[in-house]
Length: 425
Image 1: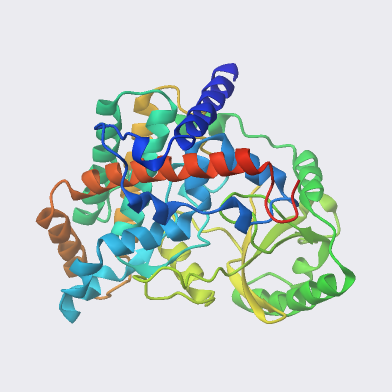
Image 2: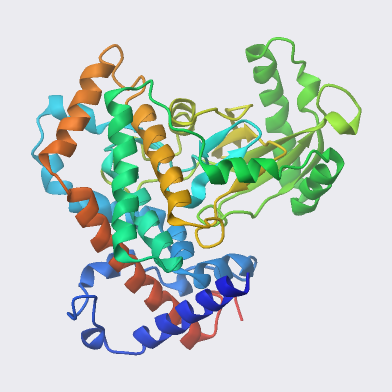
């Protein structure tokens, strides 16, 4: 643990040092001034109010991967821009193969081990669009993770290749599955079965709500209960009676989104069989040009989760609260996400996760996206990869450098301003 704190402290010090130089004086790895393209990935901390969630700001400052998680929409738009000319030149027939099921925010720390299984979770930014969005995001995440662990450049490149190998393998054979990664087995062996402790922790995550807002959420839950009971045999609407309800501020990319956490009655009045439901506002993805569904349509989230996840969470659905759409999913008692600089003991452990995530995306991207012509869609996707060999590797390398530069600017701005954003201190 001490080693990681030292590494993160050193990373912040390096970022501040870089940011104190003029842009022309900041060398990249080749000794040249960095591209102004990194400005596309820079977000100004003054544009956000972190005063109510200082832990979020701390996570963003702690290392570049935390910042990377926070800027998913600018990052995705940057990737759209890189590939804009190619997409504009596609025929309508071939453009169809650029409308796959997207996770939307695929990175190492979205890979989780749960009571249901393992794989990429958290589909807030799911949509339909070009596969390179997910591929580029996960590849950059691997590069940042490798650097945070102090591994050499050769290891970084091998991690990206392993991820792409998994993706290609699943496109060729959608029945392909990866062995369980060693880190997944290790985390599962530490799972707790203390339901009382879990529910007490859930209660502690709930923030207070204004009375009117709580009434609106409860009203939406009443309608939701009727729909869920109709869709699931043997479930009574009373299962979804809220016995606890509050706001939720967990997460990094979604930490500033409106979210609610609900403790449900469950099958009986015995608190030991209570269930937990999260209600998340559907995020507007209007800033990402190259995806098909950009507004707050909850079905983009539900469809991608059902098609991309190995095992979707229970109670997938949606509700309308006020003038906004929200999507829902049940929690599980045990849920362990990867931590890029603390989970992995060796590069091989991360490589196993990378390969598994590649398999998951290779299976999920084309799944039902062009039924009954799934085989043709998978073949076209492979052809796209073959037409531009080494492109994912090269572009992800450049984007990782842009993320590091943008993060250093963010850290320097926070340090110089001494503020947590508007309203902060």
